[in-house]
Structure formats: C-alpha cells, structure tokens
Image (cartoon, rainbow, N blue to C red; front, side):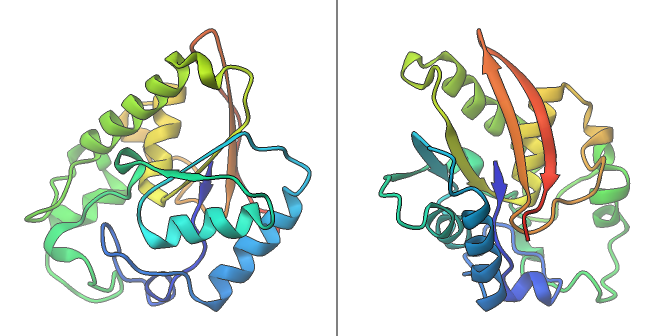
Length: 196
C-alpha cells in the first residue's frame, strides 16, 4: 500500500479530499525513487484510487512493468466537502474540523464531506473482497491510495478504534506499508516506510 506522491496542494497545506490534483515535480520524483527501491518486487495486480495523483504514483512506481491499473472508488481519499481547497494553516473557525486529527472519533464532516467511519467501511469492503477472491491468493498486489484512505485500510487490518486512527501520524508522501493475508486474515507487517 502506498500513499501518493506530493502535489501542489500538499505543499500548500490545502485539503484535497476528492479534488483531483496531479502530482507536482517533487511528487513524481518521490514516486520514481520509490519505484526504483521496489524494482525487484514482482507485482501481480495493481489497484489505485481513481484520483490522478494516485494513478500517477502507481504508474511511476511500476515504471516499465506493464500491468493494468484497476481503479476502485473504495480506496479514494476521504471527501472534505465544502472545505476542499482550504489551507489548513488558515484561521477558519470550525472547532469541529479540528477534531479530524485530534479526536477522530468525534469528527463531524463539513457540508458535503464524508465521515471517517464511512471511509473505514468502504476500505474494509475493498480488503474483504481481495481476501475472498481466490484469484488473488499468493499474489503480490500494489495499492496506490491516500492519507486517510490508507489509514482506513490499516485500521481495518489492525482492528484499532477510530480514536487511534491517526496513531503514528499521517503517512509521508510515497510511504509504503505492507500487509499479508492468509486464510482471509490480514497482518500488518510494516507501516509508513519511505525509500527516498
């Protein structure tokens, strides 16, 4: 599982959510460097969020490996609704939004936004489908996704409560996490490792 590379909005500390922002030059370089570090891994399948920054990351990590990238809405980033594009460093008066990181179990999304529990449910459904499909048994799968979505995947694997959603912080751009699945049971092997 890999978080996408850096975008202009990452650098400007803007909330991206469902906004379709591409990688910037540094984001492409991070994905390329990560791809070189993972060059010896023979991926069998590749899944990505449909958002451009995740698809680009998957393409750059794969480099010359010609594998089809299957996009899946369930591993898309959390939606921030009307707050997308707002800089997190700006003073916008919403004490509810501050709970997103400091008290995620109490977080209520802005208008048009998505709850953390919904992200956990959809990422959990994605993992369950992978685990139950015999086609993926003994296969190595690359999943390109986003900060909140990758935490959804991981908390589904570890069983941690939403109150611990951000344990360890937001993953770095192009950070890699590894999980194994045997007999339908996932185990987290490593989390938030960078190769650049």
